[in-house]
Length: 129
View 1 (cartoon, helix red, strand yellow):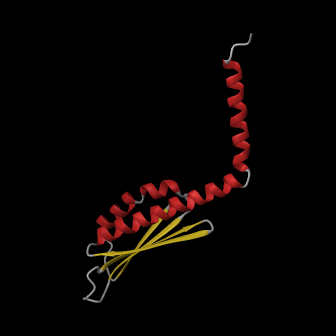
View 2 (cartoon, one colour; view 1 turned 45 degrees about the horizontal axis):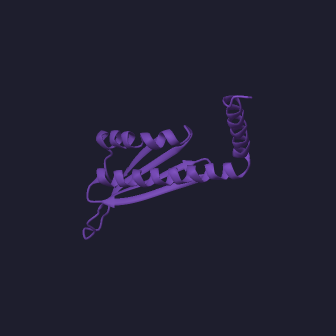
View 3 (tube, helix red, strand yellow; view 1 turned 90 degrees about the horizontal axis):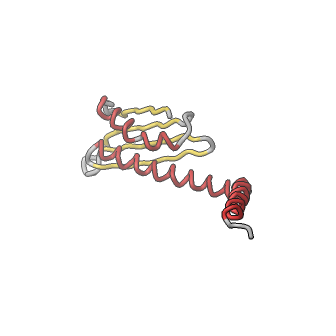
């Protein structure tokens, strides 16, 4: 997975970059190597907003785009919240694809083969008289 981190009037430090890559390892294992993630960090200019550090993530997958937006007083915490939200969305997307594949009949062939194998092992395990 390709990760691009942009800072809008905020410097992207090595600490933020390393933290993002470490936290996104779990998500990277679940998506294709061709997936692209764009993270944008910025500070909310309104001084009355307490959660002024904002992290936005956009994950481009094949056929779908997932977005997450979170804010908190600390940039690292905002990034953690955004990564957790993206991980939840990726898991839901993968489960949805898996469910569609099982209902379309591709999973039925595997289920029939499993039943045949189970019946063969049960028949071999019982002694014949």
